[in-house]
Amino acid sequence: MTAGIDDIAIYIPRLYIDAIDFAKARGLDPVKLQKGLGVSQMAIVDANQDPACLAANACLKIMQRNKLSPEDIGRLYVSTESAFDESKAMNSYVIGMLEQVYGQGAFEHCGGIETKFACVSGSYALYDNTNWIRAGEADDKAALVVVSDIAKYDMGSSGEMTQGAGAVVMLLNDKPRLLEFDPKVTATSIIDEYDFYRPFGKETPIVHGQYSNLLYLIQVRKALDAYKKKVVSTGLIKIEPGETILDHMDYINMHLPYSNMGKKALAYMVRHEWRQLPRWKRILQEIGMDEPVPKDPRGTIESVLGDAEFMAKDHEFTKLFSKTQEFQEVYESKLASSLIASTMIGNLYTASLYLGFRSSLEFEYQKGIDLEGKRVGFGSYGSGASAMVFSGVIQPEYKQVVKDMNLEVEIGERKRLTWDEYENLHENKLSIDESMVHTKKEFVLIDVKTETESRGERRYVFNE
Ligand code: CAA
Image (tube, rainbow, N blue to C red; front, side, top):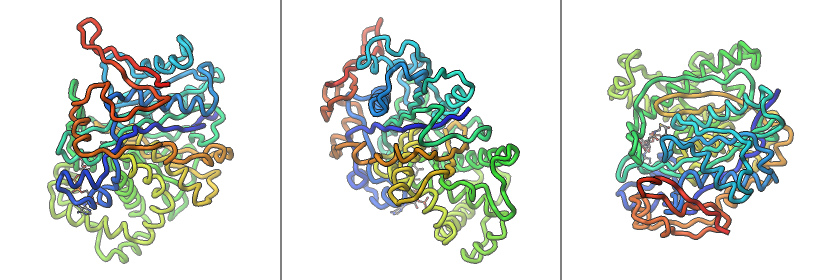
């Protein structure tokens, strides 16, 4: 049985901090954010929003757009790393909100859980729900997989320039109009690491920035190697001599903690794949330097990062490689469109990969390219750490969905925050009833109880 993504909807908070204002306040060159990281605006949640209401708003959109009733939905999963309860799953809050619109008990038949593994958990949720459909257990019902996060870092930390917030929901079924997942090739890697984590009770993560960048690259490469073995052994793809697996992916979507990380990851994977090919000799000649090797090629991530000479040379090599015509072609044709939304919205943790996929569909379609039958590869990464590589094929009916995609319209009108407003929101100085904007037809948080017996209970309303 086939399964995949039928439709995709996003919900982005109505507030943002602009990279220019951020850089000015932090004494940084705005070009570092805009060009160095690929961050132009970062979405910020209002005082009356949490990741559950972002998720519920995205779900309502996709249900209304597809005229779905709760009876059409068999599973609702929420993947997040912004959880606010150690036990009660975020999807239960989402169900509660949706039932304010669809009636109490309307989703009673539905199942689902909250999944956690930093930014990769949404990919595991997609995989599990795809397999639920493939196994014939869905009873003609669809699954909703929502990825929802608030990427918030400590004031003044290096991560603060890579914040963002939002939710992406994907409707999965057995006749997907957008993308059918390739069966039996999903590949994973996993390792116990502390590159980025958020201990109990702490609102912001502890981050080892450059360490996390390198670990991301290594783990995704490992998952890609495992994916390659699977596509060959299942016969899904035949890799001819002189080719690489990446030649068989028409589009590549990467996890995007900031948009330029996608380009970095692509360059790393392409280097890894092309190194073995005859074309590599020509590329090295064009670059004009040999590919640098660390002093201890079998060393740890710390030893590689501590090898200043190697890091400087590798940085130079990557820059030159990224400018080669061969790489530019791959970048422009397979990845660039997926990065556009990220520059406008920022990091969405679990949702960033899927915002990228959504972005790629819209902007590739706008180029007039026929997307039917194109294979899309996904490189998902979650700190702590696990990576997942998988793929799917764009379906003949994709135009029915993609023709109406308009990111700016879907984001809606936004308010550019002043620095003081941003600081107040970041430091949680506003109470829930002091929200900056008053939205209509959206779920918002109205109360978080503080009394001993009901501490942590949350109340939401749908603003008519
Ligand atoms: N003009 C133009 N470019 C500039 C510049 C300027 N004035 N100053 C710096 N740059 C460029 C740098 O050259 C660099 O680009 P390249 O890597 O292509 O050379 C880029 O801007 C960033 O500069 P730095 O590497 O010096 O930036 P930093 O060390 O201060 O911070 C960061 C970068 C480590 C990613 C930091 O933002 C951070 O810690 N972020 C949070 C962690 C993170 O996102 N990790 C990613 C992997 S883990 C993950 O993916 C999970 C997740 O979602 C968090």
